[in-house]
Length: 390
Image 1 (cartoon, one colour):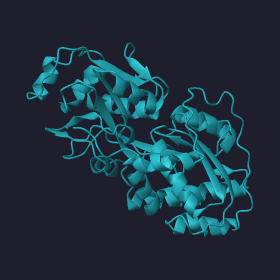
Image 2 (cartoon, rainbow, N blue to C red; image 1 turned 180 degrees about the vertical axis):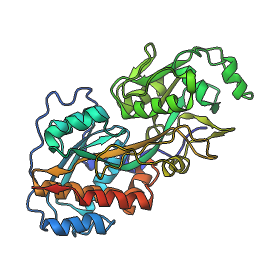
Image 3 (cartoon, rainbow, N blue to C red; image 1 turned 120 degrees about the vertical axis):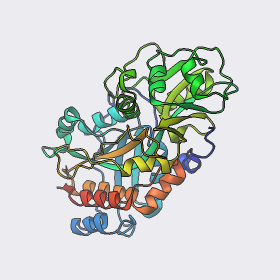
Image 4 (cartoon, helix red, strand yellow; image 1 turned 45 degrees about the vertical axis):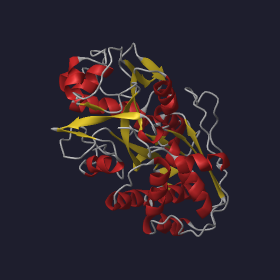
């Protein structure tokens, strides 16, 4: 399957007008200083803004009267969606400047803990270590994970003369663990009897930086591939010897320019590339937002022990017909308490817009993501209502 319409066409068209940073620095926090609390008078009191965050999902309840700035950093997977959200939010709140530095999930959360940004984007929810680390900036109540972006993770490949591949979880795991090393391996050929598979070396491509996309992909392999994947899930790629690229853009660049490669990426970045149909039960499922949404709807919230936290435990091993199991949920990681009330109001207003039907449509058009459900939206808005400042 070749993906032809999944990439951020809206985001590309708008990117030049935004104050969105995408520097691709693997160590973005080294020279950063804490973001200044420059939000001016919000033009509304905290109670009114809380009503806007929790009562009106349209994101414009404050009537465009907010002023100030927000700085965020994190997951490159949600970069296209953030580009589109920032541009569209600028029409709702022209007095608010929002920036996003697409540096990877781990670096974004680190920046939040250092006070360099006001919230972080992350493709995996905070583990215990990072929940503690963000308290350096957020205070004793820490931060909560708000799921705002749902996207499939594509397994893309570059193989001349082959425009589609069916691969089950065990075969995908063996390829990325470098146990299957030739494209015409009998295990691949058995699942693709009509494909003209060459006798060429397989070159697996992974992220070189700590990555929420890697975390989700390795969680899928650990859950669905059994003994074929002998590694623990995590943000750091566990297998040496393949090609590696920094952030989503680095992986996609290698895949696009190197024959024989196979890699994983957020689906928003793989327009025009050939993709794997993933084995689920007795069928092979094509990547689509709708197929990804099926997995999210069937997955429970994680028990993190943090009140208001909306971390989701994805069911990567699902056998539900038509469900695409390699899914990424990207979160906005938000402090439960901010020292500055105006800053808290700005965070709440922006993310309430992101979670609104309008905001989710903007992300779907700009990044091909799957809109969050109405029920999950209500939970996000309720959680934002408990965010305080001052």
